[in-house]
Length: 224
Ligand code: NI
Image (cartoon, helix red, strand yellow):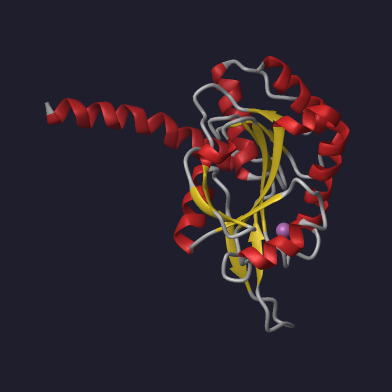
């Protein structure tokens, strides 16, 4: 019996490992590993990947990102995925001390929300910090208010942040610039459209046009 389980587990793991390896070594110059994985997985499952110019990556069948979490919002309230189950959410992982990429992407999210008009009431934009040491609820409250009135900031313990980042395959690491005593965070930069179950339905690449993002969200809302 144990032997059968071992063989079954091995049979499942080998294709996944091969897919990762193919994706990793088959990356195009500058292409993030997740992009490459999606592209290769899409090829294998027969789903044509979205054209790169569109900025929207469709999740291939069998690839699941997201799920349950327990974090603290920018008002100090403990929240879980159940608090966001009445609609869709637009989720970004970043940090308030980010000099350039995070403000750009949060600006794009805010612009897409505005373009949605009435439909924006069914979408909650969320910033999950990957720098919980500095991004306290108070720090997040000040920061999110600069981008959009509906933007929710989420923080937590190092372990809670590591858990949700793992669920979304988000990479992050501390870096110490030589000319500064402060640290920065290196991090992947995708925007996730998640459904009421807090699992990703679509992923937006960095620098996606707000019009493209709003149109993709609208199409997803219409499908229910
Ligand atoms: Ni950033």
